Image 1 (cartoon, rainbow, N blue to C red):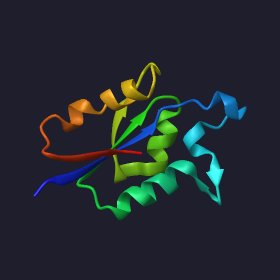
Image 2 (cartoon, rainbow, N blue to C red; image 1 turned 90 degrees about the horizontal axis):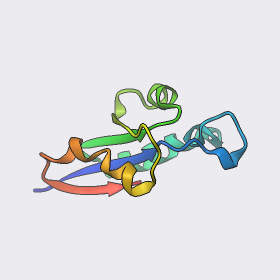
Image 3 (cartoon, rainbow, N blue to C red; image 1 turned 45 degrees about the vertical axis):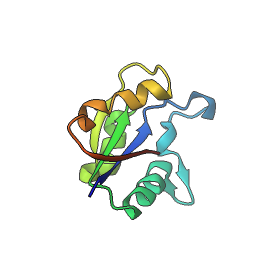
Image 4 (cartoon, rainbow, N blue to C red; image 1 turned 60 degrees about the vertical axis):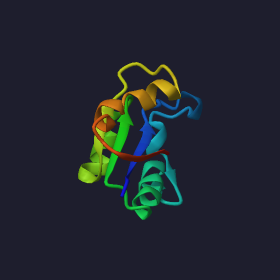
Length: 100
């Protein structure tokens, strides 16, 4: 049986939000956006979750803790590039990947 793996894209700075808070840490209905995403991801029970972090990496890691592994996107070069940062975590895996 194939396993499920999830990639959460959380590297953006969120400059258009005109805030010092990193994009995925902005609250929506009382919780940071990334928590809503993680809650949905956990519902599909993936074997591993890889969160791609960049701006505010330490803060995002503090929010999610050990619920995820982390890949660093040091330079934001788009969504495709962000997904590629998780490739090393998944190259030896056999399963289905979903990107959130």
